[in-house]
Image 1: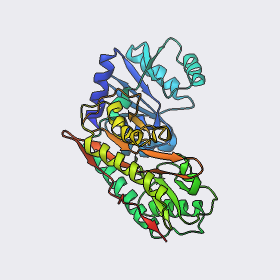
Image 2 (image 1 turned 60 degrees about the vertical axis):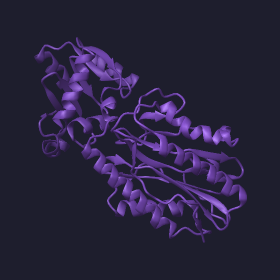
Image 3 (image 1 turned 120 degrees about the horizontal axis):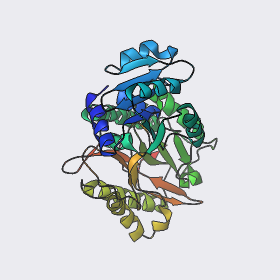
Image 4 (image 1 turned 90 degrees about the horizontal axis):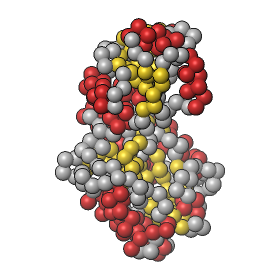
Length: 357
């Protein structure tokens, strides 16, 4: 457990006038306590922090959640929560409104009788937006693994392979080199399927003289990397080169100009304005990037809807694209961290148009 993280959370709770917070989200539970088990709750007050989990995790909880009181709950962990709050004289309990379903809220209201449930929005997510040095070190390792995976797979891809064959090779490589899993379902989209922004690998057989879009990442020590490169099997046409070079220009311009203090909207415009200038604005329908960390999509967003101020320590992707139905699409993506003066790019795979086989 990081006492600094716990203290920062308590400060936010104090500002929001929250007496107690029950953490149910697995990512938030791990962030605050260090506990990686699949089941448990963390209960935080101004002077107490308790991890409630079951018999399966008795030893693991004691090893990982140092500094927290560990309670092995019985059939219902909420019975333990109710008794703890009653003993502490606390009558209001905040819950993570993004992570508690309506059905759970109904059940909690019944089990926590005499306790007033108070919705709390994004407290820990706000803390998670700013990565500390230990997190950034892990994210760099995850990015390095993604880069090595790209180098590995470009030596194997050939026409006649199925997209699923390529995805399997990538995922086995990442797992064999330290990843717990892939960060998300690996996208391998070839030919006209490369125009699908989220075209996860299919049974399509890779042909020749066509794009292959590879979007993947390593889930490593609790953190995600996210890398996209688009390559060509065979010889690119003039159209292939045209849209590839536009996306590359947009991505490089964004990377060269993103700075702390600008909004997510302003960062998005750096790439979007260039793609729009060339007449492909309608073919770029998603945001320029998203936050990255313990989850593959976190705050902040680089999009037309984001007024979040970019701050040192935030980690985001930069991933403009052009998608032409019936022809194909290009996306180029890197992971970056906002610094005091600009950015640091975590991923380093080559971005010139690579032609394979």
